[in-house]
Length: 401
Image 1 (spheres, rainbow, N blue to C red):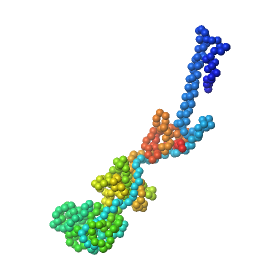
Image 2 (image 1 turned 90 degrees about the horizontal axis):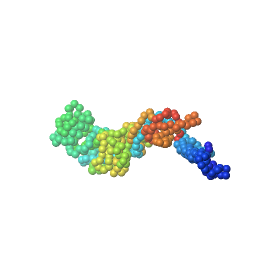
Image 3 (image 1 turned 180 degrees about the vertical axis):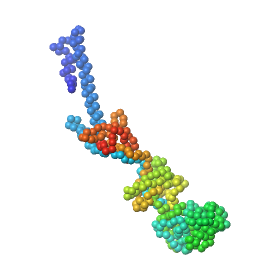
Image 4 (image 1 turned 90 degrees about the vertical axis):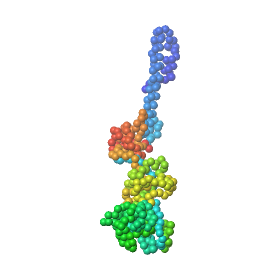
């Protein structure tokens, strides 16, 4: 390529002894071509600069090319990754704890001496004995409120009567009696109570005395702790601490993450052994009393959450209890899935190149050569990106390193 030199400029701009001074029309005409060449030479230099700039831009946009002695740029290392067709999903991941839930205190009512207690880890169903007072069993009933009085024929109507009748029906002691689950203590109720007393080995009085049953929200509980001791008198302190029988995951999202957790929402729980099981958000406790939201499931201490009670606590019910039981109480990772795509072409995000003028591309390697392919981005999650364009699964894309 021809480039103007200092000598060329001097010869054309300064008259010499061999070149007569410009004078008249003829001299003006002879000087014209020289002036024309002077005007064109900066254009040639500008073209060289543009070409150099273009080469520099190309080097920026193509970092996969190694350096050379001509450019003086150091070689840029790179690797390749395969374009895969797979599913991709984004979402929020938070650490949590797997446990049986926050224990609920069981306080004995009435009077007497504790004569039998369960063992830690025992599972007790509704209708079975929780513990024993003065040689008589205290039986688990299902309910959201404690019994507060003796119940017998002639007692005034009340919600405690309704709760008693519902348990008698659920346990099968009202079969064939046509017992309605309402607030009235009827003759049919007396008969159902006597049936229950016979099955429990109690004297058949048709009367429920205060302290002979304990109502808890869950139909089955797990004994977490037994703080009471045999021979101790029944009082205001807890006899047992019980939980639900299912393992649940608990986590505490930050304030700006709470909106992604709604009761009934679906999540994925990764157990300590790497197993992933589906889960459902059961309760959302916003911190402080009276702030719990939930879908009504569970019981046995699903409210509350351990840790900092001023923070929002999310309780997640797990579908895979067998897998959870193998892992046992331990740390877990809970993922709230947002958007997802199936059968997507996916590349590492590090393979994406921002193109001059906007958009993205990837450099596809093959046959000892590379080619730049413009792509359209879809979902980006977990350091991977969904792409579409003139590219297929199995292609190798360049990743600068």
